[in-house]
Image (cartoon, rainbow, N blue to C red; front, side, top):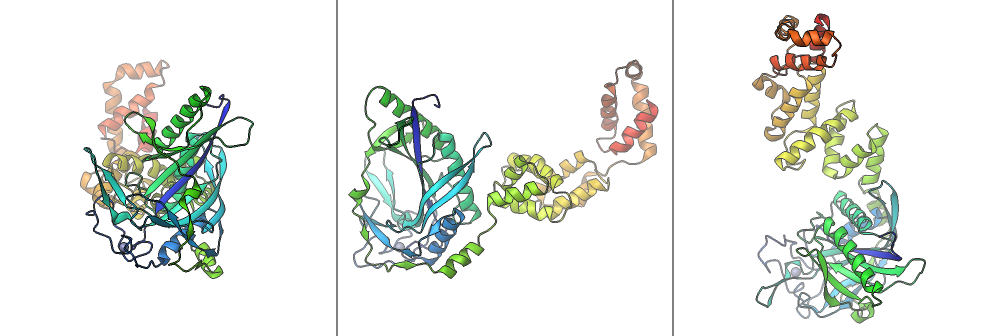
Length: 478
Ligand SMILES: [Zn+2]
């Protein structure tokens, strides 16, 4: 793509439902869009009945403020809600309450790490609050069903500057935003359920020129893979259109997962088509300076800060990033590291062993049963040479599933390390006596056989031999 004479210009619009208990402007509960019975969490306000008055959900404002601050935005202290007018069956009021001229946050930025390790700063144009629409289900034989459970759910819109140039950058930025929303505890990031939606708008322009080309907006991307893939597809499609001397049509396009291509959904309205005007039923929302300061002070440690802290205690950039990826994993690591003097050892066990077990059992860090304190107890047994490393891995494997303490598992499985010198000495003698040919070969210079001898001895000891003692005695005999 880089050799192309066109430069792709991409901006990302992200819609994230806020995990409040109630909806944005009424008392209805926010329910799971997949499991809750359709239209079971609705009232006259979110159904758009005439004469019903909306009331701003303060918690949604607090959540939005948290996000705007975490994304380094300037906060507009005076917010005005507006009506965005359009007709669509999922919108019972025929307008959506949103923020238009005075969004909550503006001029933010986010540093994103790309696959080649480089960091790119992506500007964030605005962060604003609005309400979600209902959900349409189109039936196979024609006709559509509408579920208003989602109607009025607090929705945050995060709009990037058009400074993204590839599907990979779009994906890195989208993933970082999702990670931060999860750290802030305001959104689950579940793209399959549509509570976190990423919509890139994509245009091409000849390299070296400044005006933007006609853009298309991509919808129904339900994973970061399809975000990257769909964006790359759209860049290539537009390039072919332009190369053929035609014009790109400004429109909304969907991603067809089966055919792995985009398709035209509807012609894109210009912003002025929406006829925004101030929402007369809501007072202006004033965000006081003390409120901003309190929200800033209450922000949790964010991923970049955490990665920096981990590298400062000796973890590699890779280890730091992998652990900080998920807040719950990072919290688990912090709890273990607080009980143990070597964070690097904790990181090794977490990344190499615990992650493998989580993967094998399809468990999350909070679902598995080994607590940080239990891992530290296990490491203590290894240090005191009660068990060796291999046995410790076996113990952790059971601990993750049963939540039993290390000492109990070691006792039940008879894993305690064999440090009885007389016992090991007899095994060494026996192995060497049984393999006289290899011993001769070793003495004739085939020194790599030493490792093989260790393996044979360990096998006789069922893997429980004290490795230092085994090596020491083997040296004595060889
Ligand atoms: Zn309602």
